[in-house]
Picture 1 (cartoon, one colour):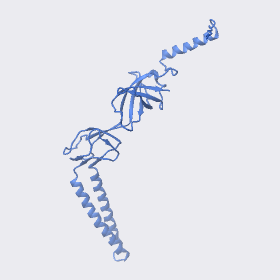
Picture 2 (cartoon, one colour; picture 1 turned 180 degrees about the vertical axis):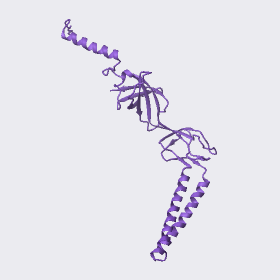
Picture 3 (cartoon, rainbow, N blue to C red; picture 1 turned 90 degrees about the vertical axis):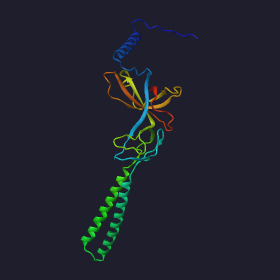
Picture 4 (cartoon, rainbow, N blue to C red; picture 1 turned 60 degrees about the vertical axis):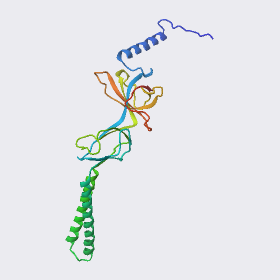
Length: 257
């Protein structure tokens, strides 16, 4: 097979076009502009939990029980910690008894009023007492509920700091992390600003099992470049429904156009 090679004449239009393209290339390199036609390089990254929550009690008290330990999975609304609540439970019982009494009294007053056996003022007073008792019962129940701490997220227990019998005053009881999805943080050179966009696909290679890349998607690209380092931050997301990928791993990421 023969390949015909054609040489551009010196000073011809083809030569000028090549020079123009070369000038644009040199200008882009001089200005640090991204070469969008070139593939994006591989960036260093860090795999982190999508969310981290430190659980504290909204009220002072002593821990009665903790239902989870480190590495346990938790679901939203799951009861994790209970504080001792004997006083609050007695308050609910007392308020409930009073509410029942006042409701029966209200029912009798309404029946008597229909029979015109009592004046309207007596009926109104019974209605008010029943409503007040209902609010007091609701307050007592809410006060009791404050002594039960539930999970706000779907995740795992990262740390457990306290045990039953300890005071919770101004202390973190549990640290929860959400690891589905996982968050990938990337610091990219400013020269690639504009080439990285939300929605781009990527391959993430963690330092553990790098031969098995993970599919990721760009979710956030910072609009501000750090002048000190000449970099900008990018965030990606990795689905992790079976919690197979741990957080805290260093990684490499390659973005795809």
